Each structure stands twice: as C-alpha cells, then as structure tokens.
Length: 173
Image 1 (cartoon, helix red, strand yellow):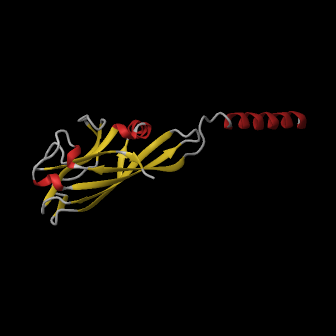
Image 2 (cartoon, rainbow, N blue to C red):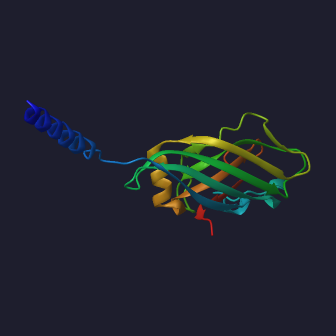
Image 3 (spheres, rainbow, N blue to C red):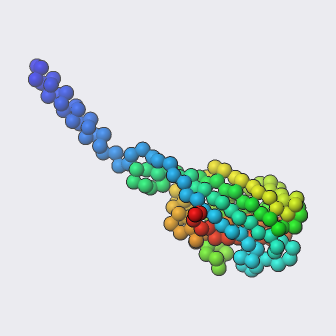
C-alpha cells in the first residue's frame, strides 16, 4: 500500500510540473517608448497662412507598455505633453491627436488625445497641456512602434479646423 501511495505521489508531482510548464508566456513586464514631434504650421497640407502661421509646438509622447515574456505588447497607454508658442493671444485648441500618414499625407485620426472643447487655451499665445493615461489598443501601439515616421501629431484651432500645426513622430533620444 505504501508503494502505491508513493507511486501516486510521484505521478501527481510529475503531472503538476508538466502542467506548469505549458504556459506560453510568463509574467508581464513594463516598458516605455518615448517619441517627440516638432509641430509647424508650414507642415500642414496646405501650409497655414495668416496670424496662426507664426506659431509652433513640440509634443513629447511616452508609451506605457505591458509586455509578455516574449516581448509582445499586451496592453498600452500614452502620456502626452504639448508645448506651444507664437500663436495669437487667446488661441484655443479644438482638437489634438495622432494621425496616420507621412509628411506629405493628410491621414485619418489614429489616436485622440481626448481634448474637451475649450479645455486648452493660450491667453498669451502659448502654453503647455498634458494628458495622461490615454488608452491605446495593442494594434495601435504596435503600428506606431513599428513605424513612428508614418504618424504625425496634429493640433487644431477654430481658425484652422483641419489642423494648425503638425509634426512627424520620431523616437526620443
């Protein structure tokens, strides 16, 4: 009887070890990827003219990534800070987001920064806004990570509803 109990215990341990090793991925790890964009009214298609043409902005974007043990992105969000200068006093942003497309393409909105109407105003023609925890799908994150130059940041105003300044994403140094 002791021999049967001993064999059964060995079998249970062997099965438990075998089942534990079938996991395709281990625990997730956290990582970040950082990008910048220099936004210019001259980069808009067509280029901006008028009072807002003197403005410019920079965007700093951090992707907050969860990855499995194989390095695959399993979850993502982003944080963005946009600093603008040189716009007319009381310029208000109406939208801000990442578009798909190269420098010569007006692409569709890919990731919205979720600005509410009137949320960002520049009484003195410039300033900074930050948005954190913007949700991304895994597909959105992977697309941008694979080809950041194929995406641009765009800010919009009432005077230029199609975009007032844009710039391609580049990996941060």
